[in-house]
Structure formats: structure tokens, C-alpha cells
Length: 302
Image (cartoon, rainbow, N blue to C red; front, side):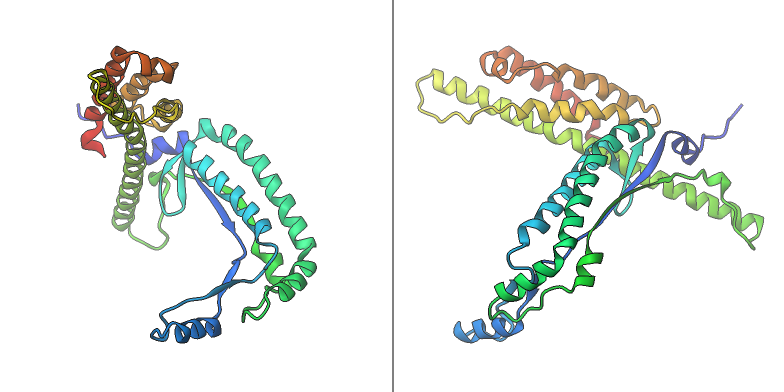
């Protein structure tokens, strides 16, 4: 007897959420139209050719950059623990939520501390910027602008089961069609998420194959007395694989057999020392073969 295909939205709603990291910052620079015109005249250029920008907070740029650096670190950390979902959204396994929050909380606390100090010093920062900008025709930010400029927030949204969707004031037939479209959008988003996972694992595997193949080739040529520069093998040739390998199993939210096979295959790279790779051609050949096998398994999926 034929059974209905399980709804992907129903499956995902039980094991994952959509994560969103929102941030804002103060724009540090502004275009100085007057200086831009002056540089065009000095260079005998068509008006509008040159663009001169100047800092609005001359002397305090590093403080904003420090906050922006925290934001970048938070985004990179979330990206490492998740896969792409929609615009500005990440698919987060429920099992990884606690680990993510443990990583995010201290970053957010530090960010809030820096923001509070910047806002407290805002009158001084504005006064210094007015003096430090010299003759540049840019205005420092206002106190109100600084007070509302900075934010770093995290939110999660549950993935709804398409079957629970109800359209007010529509026919049963149209409501069924809307559910079908909603389910299709979930399937498309999850397809992007899994492709993202495959692409991310393929990149360091391809790099390992290239680097080990080159290393073995140069080593053979040097043994024949040729004076060829050997590009060093760095630890990252392995750690970039093991880093994604430690997360890859969490990306398999639907017990996909291909993803399960890759998770298992990536364990072959754990505990490999780069110095052993340099000494042992057999080890290099073995890892190259295993990396190539994984890439062959996913070549049609990326």
C-alpha cells in the first residue's frame, strides 16, 4: 500500500530552528563632496571621477572597529554551526542551540559593554571629532545617532509545519494549494542548506588533494636533484577538514544516508599530524584517495 511522503516541514520543525543574527553599527566615513571636486580639478579629471571620504569620528575609529570585529566573530561562529537557509537566516540544529548560546553570550556581553562605554563617551567623541576632522567637510554624528547606532541581537524562529497553515477567508481548495506552496518553499530552503553543507566540506577536501599531490610531486623532483622550492604543508590542510567534520553530522537533520556516509568518512582525517604527512608518502596517498572518494560521492550535489 502506498503511503504519503512525510512532510519535510513537519520533520524539520522537530529538530531545527531558523537562526537570525541582527546587527547595526555607526557609519564611520562620509563623502566629502567639496574635497572630491578639488581633487578632480587638481588631477585635471572629469567632475565626479574622484571620491574623497573622511572620518566622522576622527580619533575614535578603533572603538567602532572593535565592536564590528565582535559582530564579525559572532557571525562567523554562527555560520560554522549552521547552514544557509534564507536571506540573513541560518538553519540551526536544536542540538547545537546550547553550544551556540554559550559561544554567543560572552561576545554579546563584551559588545554591550563596549557600546555602553562608547555612548557614555559620546559627547567627548563628538567634540574630538569636530576638532580632529580639520577642514574636511563632514559632520560628526549626533548624540542621538550614536545612542541608536549599535546593536547585536540573536533570535530564533520555529519552522512551522505546513499542515498547520490556515488561510482566513479562503476556500479549502485554495488553502490546500497555499500549503503545497509553503511546503515547496521549505523543501527549496532545505535543499540550499544541504548544498551549503556539501560545498563547505568539498572546499578543504579539494585543497588537501591539491596540496598533497603537489607536495609529493615536488618531493619526487627534489629527490632527482632538481632545485625546486617546496611550498610548506601547514596544519590547516588537516584542521580545516576536521573542523567541518566535527560539525557535519549536525547538518544531517533528516538522516540522509549520503550525509551519514560523509560524516563517517571524515573521521579518517582525525588525529592526522601534518608532520606525518610530510614524512609518509603512503599516508598522503591514502588521505588523497579518501578525500577524492568523498568528493566523488557529492559531485552531483554541489
